[in-house]
Length: 414
Image (cartoon, rainbow, N blue to C red; front, side, top):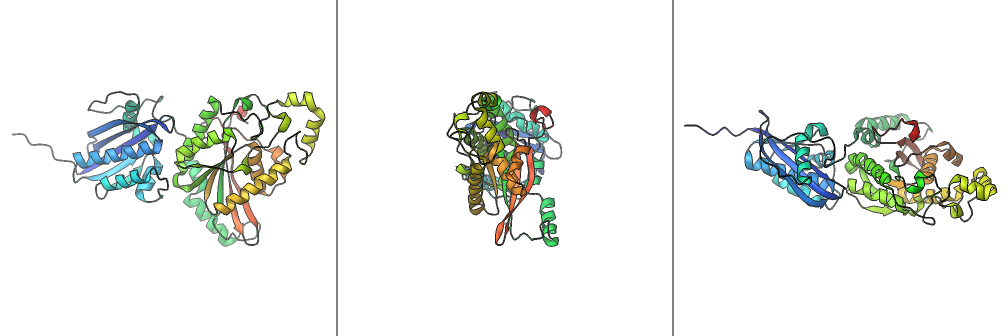
């Protein structure tokens, strides 16, 4: 007489979720393995309609935890995911600020067997769950049995760039310790910081048809073009990188101009945050030159162009001067520092405002903007430390950085 195999004492839940569009068509994959033999005990692959990537990730975790409770009751459970946001929130390291994730987080905690642990793994080590999510998105029926690794293309997610470098630049234990040591020993400038910095993660918008044609493209007073398909792809790549910041980001702010709003909406979806507008961070108004190339302006108004290039005080006809833009941008910065003191804020803006903020953070003259280059959808980071009785002390932490693997060192991108 045969006996049923003993139930495993330890199991591993592998879960993944993805959204093509974020938000867009979404699905999750989840499975339960015997931790000792590696045998897959059960799995699930379900399309959930239109949702964000993070909603799909949580849905996959919940499904995996339910499978563990059903097929391995009483077993010790380790849940493994490649979503650092979900893992850190389940561990209690990060808060769950987004209202749409709070009920999913509560449900996951409720269904998790007592003593469940959570582990972040690289995406390559989560290939089986990723394959299930992809197959559900593709509408494939998933039969019981071993699960094949995910295909390298066309999956639930685009290939995600290395997230760790950006996280470490914003807030890492090493960086915090280094800041504490500098605070105790003093820093350049010989005045001790008196509080937590306000950090701005500056994102330039993706390209438009004007960007590609090298046309003057200002704020709301011009043509106000949308992102091109290339620009949307750039925004998604930046958003996937920024998603790793997770709970460290308090808010997403955007210039009210169309291309920045569209970029910010992609970024905000990855962070599960709403977008707020800050008009101070709109692009310079180019007036009569908006929509023209540099050569076209030179042919029509060489004297005006020479005057504009020769002085920070001279605006294009019907537009703004660099000094006027600086005044507007720094007023916007003052509002951000007052409303988001001590927090990290993603700011989606344009070339001139971002360069102006960088020059200000470095204590450099405004003329420094002419010596900077800034790629579309690039990321820069500045922090401002409160100083008693003085303007906040700025610090440049990252400049003109593209997601790893995105041809950062290609001179054609400079």
